[in-house]
Amino acid sequence: MAVKFYKSENQVPLEMHKVRMIQKLTLIPVEERIKKIQEAGNNTFLLQNKDVYLDMLTDSGVNAMSDNQFAASLQADDAYAGSATFLRVKKAIKDVFGTDYVLPVHQGRAAENILAEAYCAPGKVLLTNFHFTTTKAHATRCGATVEELIDKEGLVPCSNNSFKGNYNLANLSSRIDELGSENVAFVRVEAGTNLIGGQPVSLENMLAVTDICHEKKVISVLDASLLQDNIYFMKTREARCKYMEVADIYRLLADRFDIIYFSARKLGFAKGGIITSKDEKFCKQMQPFIPLYEGFLTYGGIDVRTMESMAVGLYESLDMEYISQGPLFIEYLAKELHEYGVPVILPAGGLGCHLNAGEILPNVPHNQYPAAALAAALYIAGGIRGMERGTMSEQREPDGTEPFAELELLRLAVPRRVFTLSQIKYVADRVKWVWDKRSIIGGLEWTEEPAVLRFFFGRMKEIGYWQEQLAEEFRKDFGESL
Image (cartoon, rainbow, N blue to C red; front, side, top):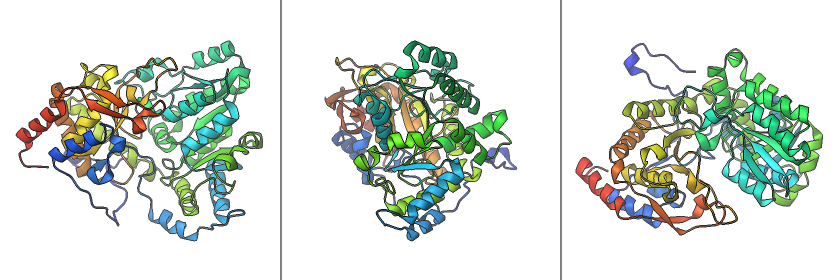
């Protein structure tokens, strides 16, 4: 929880850890930063980490692990079958979620693949509050379609709504009736919603979703990858949850959802992934795909040392002093930028601070990828690597038309327990500079456009010479400074 300072002007989020190992960072000159982003096809995924000062691309697999997680990794049992490591993971899942049936996978999108193989097919519809890129890609690859039923308030960039990831419950109920329960692959709740700013879902809304699913005999699925952030928001924003133990919220959700899956690259600060259920039936339906795509049922493609770290991380995800660190630092960065006048998604969600690129660059149209252009500009300005979460992250329809994103966002992820407060303030300072120079920034166009998941490895070039102009402005304002 937040610690109050005696002098209000000193109020900052307080680290609830100490640093015992460091990794050297390098900030290359602005002229080199232009060269590197252009060599990377203006795609921050294709930058080399040695050329990045602050890596805010993602919080997936880059969070700092605890001393206990590293220590646990030394007891790993690497037996292919009958591994004691798997039994420890299974016990951790039982202790945290209360579920008995566990399928390990190498990461979250692997779980999505297994779910898609088991339940998605031509004619089936996957209903979700909001899609995630890989979830949608796996479902459509298997012939299903994906429909979003988020409440319309979730797409308002700046509001007082504490739970902008919530389903529109009336639309969910009526849509299942229209489709017929037999045609619904499953109903998925993403808590919180990655592509609209890491916005959380309330406990009340999640339980109502499961009530509808049980009544209409449709499978309910919880993507719990960002659940620890979501539970922090439940505890601090939802009256019902204020006095509930974190463990009780985990157990209640696991009791109500048919299937839960998560990326341990996010939940628990390790790596790997898990699918779990209280009902053996669902695991039996998915189990044949584990050895086919992942590995044997006791490791699912995860290194056993990582599995030991995962087990400890799951227990640590019950500790509010651990799970508060991400949301508090994200909120601080969003507050700083909001006070500077920079359009950001509010209230701040989990995962990272999200810049509203559509509002920052209103003259750059969707088909010139404003969020990707803003990502390139911020890298040029400060060596900061963010992730485009807008139209570039979508994929074209089969007929070649391009769906435009509801929101054009640049995500600045805040890996847990990694950055210092001075680094967060540096980010705010460089974003403010980009905001002041926003009239210079232009769009991007494709030079290499993959058909699927193009944001991972596609390449673009600047339209005009705005990046060179931005670098000239940098030198005018910062002189010889990096």
